[in-house]
Image (cartoon, rainbow, N blue to C red):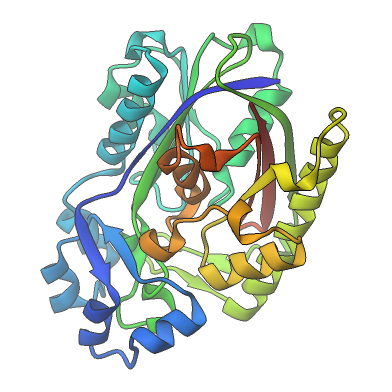
Length: 331
């Protein structure tokens, strides 16, 4: 069992609202976007004038145009997590990272974030696209505790607007930028316990969601939506059964849901099929967009300290690969 000590998040300052996208002249508007994905705004590390003038036709130019790197945004989320946990960078003994669009092939993104935070210890990437956070928890839980340091930081730096084609209305209405960070321990109790992790995959679907090197994000939208709903429900069912089997007095109305923040319509479908009531469904995709692996943990982080989190949280995420994963958090 792992213990969660804190979460942190960072959203860059530039905001892409639906009016901005409509002004790009790509045959979209507020009504079309809200009907299909339910997203009103997104954050980006890209200057708005760069998007307006180029539509980001060349993702290589976006890396240079970006106002911040993955290491910088990941470190911002990491600093929030450290402050909330009452820890120093020197307390962290390992850093794991994973995202949809890393800055470099090598070194591992975790090394760049660790260097930015001046953390001294092993740093490596465990990445499964949008499901990276729960996948990292799964592998940590599977490790022998004595092989792990007291505190491990998990970072998901996501600045995927850099790989979005802003002439493709189906893609650009979805994506935003956000970085998240979590601090967990294999032995030192924290405010939350991680009592179950779950990981499954279907590599035959590897071509359904892609970001090629120096290319734009593409997906087979309808198939991916069906996959996300089906596997999101499957993951919630596994975590729900674990929660209910944990002791007397437990009921489904005490289990809250945080899903992969792909789009609001997909999340609503998972919640409806899993019989999750609106007050038990936590999300931020309507204001932040799809921010990849940092989506679900950023929802948790934005509600850190809030009574809305309740007694238990089933986090259910899906990602390219195809991969689906989850974690059960209990107070």
